[in-house]
Image (tube, rainbow, N blue to C red; front, side):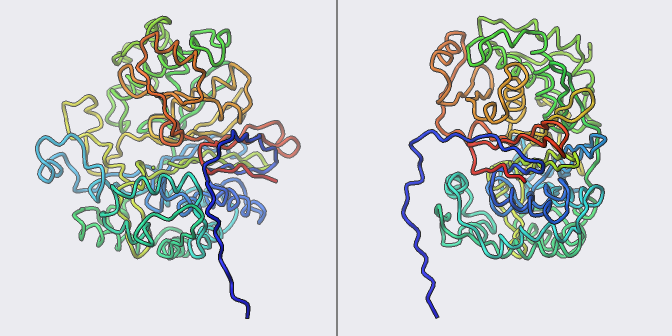
Length: 548
């Protein structure tokens, strides 16, 4: 019997050269931020499944291959074209029944403004697994258990850690290593794995099997829910199996805004997708295409439009039943035209909210030759979420509860925590149509970068004719607060100086992953059975667009 030798070369995984990704053309395609997840999706389509089956399999696999960004305790949102109509699914989590402002102020002090950033008191009921089940039941073709097979195999056998995920894993470790279950789940040798090392997650394989065998019932009414309740109680939390049993994702009608003859669709609040629509509605008042694509005028205009959008979103967006204004009022054409007039092309401004009453995330996308297209986003919010990992089933839990407010007199009182309520949410899938027909499923991950990425990449495609991969690869800026923006180091130096001259307070950032998100794009090239799709995957992650 021949011994098996493992030889991992001590490569330098920093590439000193510019690496160009090219668009992928195929009739069936999956684009994700990890190659094994993309291949998991393709496996389902090769078995006779559709784009929904592919998206679910990819989503399950990427909980294992990119655990910094998502896990079996994540939330999710989906927009999909079923071949005839557009559908939205909101699978964001709801607060446990014990959660009130008083609950948190008793535990964390009268001055606490939000629930904690980490720990079990940051965890709302995770919705991602429920989204998989709901999508499969309504639109899938293959048996649900089949969709979990690639993820189970990856968790059992392990995979070699890729470059970008490893960087973020190592960076998160000092803050999270003492949190319940984190070291057991994610520090197999008492440290973060190195690039090229084999990482296995056998507890998550057990969790995935239970989810597969029960079509999610184990998670929302059985042994996984009970295990999380026990784990929570032992670690200072109050979430219960009853909270899990009461959870249901919500089918919603996407909201949209016209731009240059196309319509961008987003999930309605409690998410921030409306920010991209507001910004585009403002930009629609200007002749953007007449401005140099990477020049200071174009970038300044887009930054100011995005600021105006965020001013309203951070003031008004929350659970729809609690909002003072409607999405329709926030998107009113006359109102957005009045907001556009506030932009000064010669100087940066710090805008306040208007009055519309007068008028660690992963993103993936899949499309098949029968015309079904799926825009899917799944997140544990911050890197590794709450930092808490239920050890029996490998459930890495999100920290979405941190997004609630505890201040009834704060800047957005509609987002005040309450039992069963959903918080303001950052993760947003996007979908583009023209004349009621599908054009592109896409998304850009990364907290408040998401609507900014939706807008910047779409402007590049629709105003400047850049192909999806070029629009994806182009340098980005990110608005933070006030006059502060970050810009990528590859942005044109003259443009950076021009923005500074107009009063933008800028920091040039070398870490593209951390600040500027990462996108996946599938553009319909024509009849999917004939022309198929053009797909792109962001080089800011370890991703892959793959098809056949």
